[in-house]
Length: 184
Image (cartoon, rainbow, N blue to C red; front, side, top):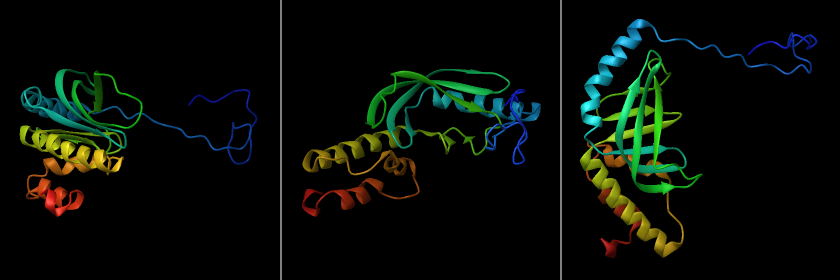
């Protein structure tokens, strides 16, 4: 953040007129090694991502079934162009039908492989035909609960379990929680 040359110095923060602390950010550019490794992983994942449906979760407001419609990359990272095929939950400001997600090669906490892109403080994008089918089925079940009770019982994070293939029958677990035993 550029300093204001007209601002008087204060004991707690030189250059601050009211003594409030300033936050300074420093952009750390990806190293050539990070760019090379990231680009190699991206190129290995793209064929799967471009042919497989996905579930995009942006907490706390959006869960949508999406398709990758394109990508671009540069020295800073990559952008995936997504097309929403079906909105499962959209609690906040409506999201456009197509948009791009940006990922930095050295973005803190961000990771990706052919099955998911995880940027925990921003979004998670899961890929898989089976998981998308389960997400649709779970959405239908939760929509039935909403029709009966007047409110959707839970937020977008509930759909993550549809992509946890080591968990067992996730939909059966959700039926036990949300539906009456006689509805099973």
